[in-house]
Structure formats: C-alpha cells, structure tokens
Image (cartoon, rainbow, N blue to C red):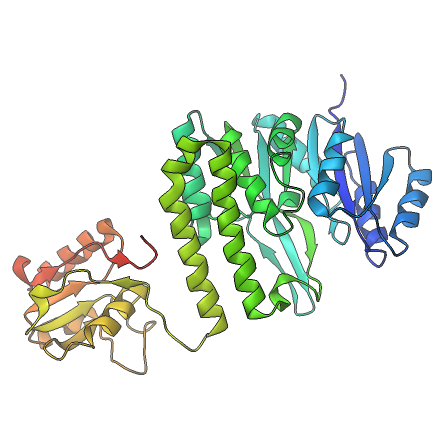
Length: 394
C-alpha cells in the first residue's frame, strides 16, 4: 500500500538563529513520507546556506531560492513546487513535536476532512502555555449556509471556547483546498493573511476536524505585533477587517451580502478590544438597555452582576429619576465591586423595589432566573428581561 505524501512548506527569511531547530524537528517526524520545501525568500543572513546544507543531508528536502517578495509569495512558491496529497506549513523560526504530522494525517484521513485544526504551544520570554485545542469535534458542512454559519460562529462572532485559531501552521490541508484558497490572496498581504486564508478554506470545505492536540511550538519574537506602537497596531487591525470584507466580496457577492453585518460586528469588536488593551483601567460598556421608559421615576433592582449587569448598572446610574436600590447575583462572592454591593438571592425579600431587571444575554438562562425570582415572591409584572442591545451591532 502506497503511503500518502505530506508536503511541509517552510518559508525562510533571515532566521539563521532558529532555522536548524526548525528543520531538525521536521526531520525527526515519526511520519517519514515527506516532501520538505525550504523556500528561501531572499535572506540576507546565513539562512540560505543552512537550507542548502540540509538539502545535501536528506533527499526529502528541496530548496527554492527567490528574491525577497514576502511571506505570502514564499508560501505560494512552496505550493507551486508541492507534490503531496496533503499540505502543512511550519514557519522557519518555530518548531514542531516529532509526531505532529503523523497525528494530523491520521485525523484528516480518518474523518475525510478538508482540513484538520489543532492547538499549539505559545512560547515567549515570559513562559509557555497551550493555546486553543480545547475540544475534539468533526463539523459536517454539507451546504453553503452551514459553511457561512460556521464562519460566523467560529470566527466573526466566536466566543472563547468556539474560536478557531487563524494560524495556517496549526493545520493540515487537502492539497486541492489550500491550492484553491491561498492563491486568491494578494502577494502584498503581509498582515492577517492566515485569517483571510481560513475564511476562504471554511467557505470551500465540507468537513472540518477540530483536534485537541498541542503539537506546534509558536515562538514569539521581540518584533511581534504586540510590540507595535498603538497607532500602527490599530491601522493594521482595521486594515485586516477591510481586507476580509474585500476578499469575501471578491469571492462571492451573495456570500458577502449575507456575511456583511457579521464582518462589521467583528470589526467593531476589534475596536473595542483594542481600546480595552490600550486603556486597561478604563471601562467601556458593551451592552445597554435600549428602552428604559418604563424604568423612569421608579425604584429598581438588577439581577445579574456579570458583564451585562455591570454595563446596565453604569447606564442606569446616569439617570436621576431611576433609583437602584439593590443588585443581586447567585454568585455574589465572585462578583464584588468597589462601587456597589452585590448581594445573594436570599436577600431579595429584604428590599422594596418596583421593577427587577434580569441582566443576562442568554434567553434560556434569563427564563430560569425569572422562575427563581417568582419562587422568591416576585410578581410577573415586576420582572423585566429584554435582549440586551449591543454596541457592536450596526
């Protein structure tokens, strides 16, 4: 039986300090039917010579020297020279576990997935930790609508647990998928290219396998994006959002029309996250009550001291004719704030108020809280829950 060939593409640019460790980790793979492509992108240090030395040591290694054209062009060059049925990527300054491609190949073939996504190990001067890779799951995406919704739920509107990491190097792809997606990117796309590729891959995939392994070592350098000046960082992040919209619109106008508001949500969330990172001691609300006419001139209580509850409290404190007499939460020990007391459910009967607002985003949980309040002597008329308005929506 013929073994399936895996092509590993390694873009190389001025990484002589790290390159040997990277290549040695690939040569040590327990799966050996490999084509290893080292794409020297016009390096001005000793990286090109190191590539040539390794090519003499192992027949599986092929080196392509090019003028410096950037990461996207280097990966495209690798794809043009690839012969494997499956394609993986390793950056020249990172390294991988010895069983990475054996495991990923087993996953992608066993489930006949278009690509398999896994976690990775993030390494920096401050230490290392496992990133992503929290669950094992197979996603069957038989229709375009299912693929669009997957993109919404796992990229544009993803919560932490459902978020699909963007990196191209934490995945193994069917050759035809990555060939058809990556060549749609511009060569000068030098920031966020992995996310753009991921969006296109999702829209072209029928089966996606999520793995919980951590097999790739991503080494954070001093010149990483986290060290950019704030202004430059904002420009790059907002430029990425615009490029996502442009790439999807160019791919298919109807898909773009369906995803447009979700891309906008993602962009607004990026802005909010940027602001919070730049000003960690400043609170910027995300949720608010859209209609408060029925609260004016009344004594009210708030149930829920999480993110929604905090934002409601900040909003309603601005109105002189709304008196917040109490704030409750079933986990009041965890949710303590310097500016207000949060009390447990057992204290509800001790307070006199005309309305109690359920500050929860999830309707099912809100219904459960409503039943709890009814059992604690509150009437249907006093309890208010409305889907929180979100400043990220537009």
